[in-house]
Image 1: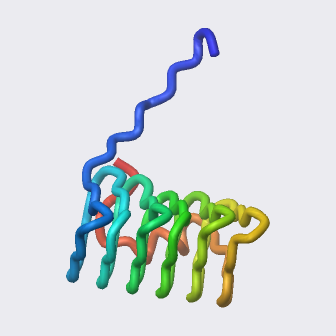
Image 2: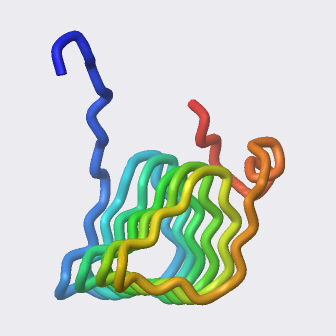
Length: 128
């Protein structure tokens, strides 16, 4: 669109389809999981779980896109998108919008929170 400048999203970390990671991952950018991840993730921008990605743990992020599978809890400031192949099993605390495509799975409790309440859950400063 002419005259419209969008800030490009920085993809800081990618865990590839042949990789496994266990532990805590904190990023001030976006990250993508195409392999297996066990532990907690906190990202300033987006967490994308690709079609071959599997996360067994908790996610805190501004935006979460699930194309693969997540088992755990999600705290999301912005939007959560579950695509047609995506599966999410766990509880969700959300400060924005949710979108589940036909075929996508959401099993768990969803709670919509105000910005000040959802900000209390984040360890890193996601607003700067």
